[in-house]
Image (cartoon, rainbow, N blue to C red):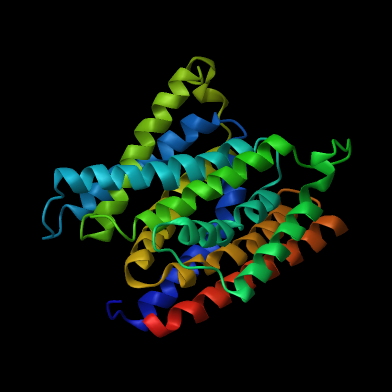
Length: 305
């Protein structure tokens, strides 16, 4: 791994820990009066254009055609598959629970690393974390699977979030092994531009622009969208892409058990989302499982670093 300053590492990890935890509330605010796919398209296209213009002012070489293609693929996996699932699912689940379901990312990381050619077999500690995580998810989504009328989440949204987390994990791992622009900001810009275009096409096919009234957009939704563009995309996502280059996937994925805590608190404090005893218990189990897996993966990888 390249040598980087400790201050930059701390700042980048703080961005993906705290800012990303707050983006779930911002998404909830933004999609209140802006169609979800259109909102995502605007977010990533604006952020991508700003970042592309800024990154091209540097002396880094222009990306090759192969690097354009590879970065676009990563953008589709991370942003369209991963973030798109969150945007759509938050129409049916509270922001805090969405963050909690997305926090299973390390589970997918472990499975994908195991299944790839020459992959790493999970240790007992990782296996224990996987089992504990499954128990936590059962506690959380059990009422939804059984069709309980008083349940606060829908099973379809749960499946969508789990698949979105799988897409994000696949993109994160793939980014470690393919040729991307040497400039992290340029790679991030291309990923956002590709995702923004796909979101706009999907929004058009879904008929969102035909039913969208700009004058009906609330100040709350506009504030949420601006926050997502500036903090969620330009700052936090750029930090994530940079961390994938200078740190290990195991360390970077630690954000998965910090984000839910931030999101659950903000959803309760600012969106009036309830935190039931069952949700609290499930959250504790899942976050503990994620921490166990991440710690075990870090220990497993340390001799090779």
